[in-house]
Image (cartoon, rainbow, N blue to C red; front, side, top):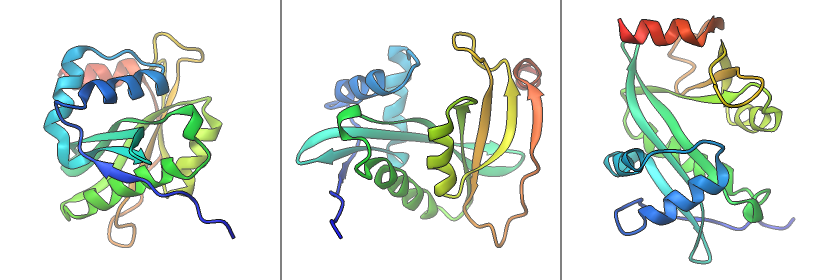
Length: 179
C-alpha cells in the first residue's frame, strides 16, 4: 500500500500573509478585505499553512466564539490548491486544526458554513465527523442556489448532547445577531 505524502505545518504570520491570501483567493469563491487578512494574524493558535516539499499547498483558519454558552471554533477559511488535491492534504490540515482545538478542553465544537450544493465537501466533512445541524435559506447573495448548511463536529460526543437540526432563513439569523 502506497503511503500518502505528508504535510508539515507552519504559522500564518506577517511574513507569509500574502502567500495565505493567494491560497485563499485560489481556493475559495469569496473575496475578503485586507482587514480580514490582517485579523487572521490574531488567530495563530487555530491557523496553519500546510507545506509539501517546502511549498505552501493549503491553509486553514479558525476563530473561537461563544455559541449558546458553548465555546466553539468556527472554520473561517480552508483550502488546498487544485494541483495538490486528492493527496490527503485536506484531511491532514483539518486533523491538525482539530488537534490544536482539542488542546483547549473548554472548546466543545467546531462548525463551518458550506454551500448547499457542495456534495463533495459534505462527503469530506462527514468522513471527519461533521454533521448537518442547520439549513440556512438565502445565506449567500452571489451564488445559486443561495443556501448553506452549518456543519458541526462535536469534539466530545460521549459527553455533549446531540445538536438538533433546524432550518431557517439567513435574514432571521442576521436580525437576531443585531438585537
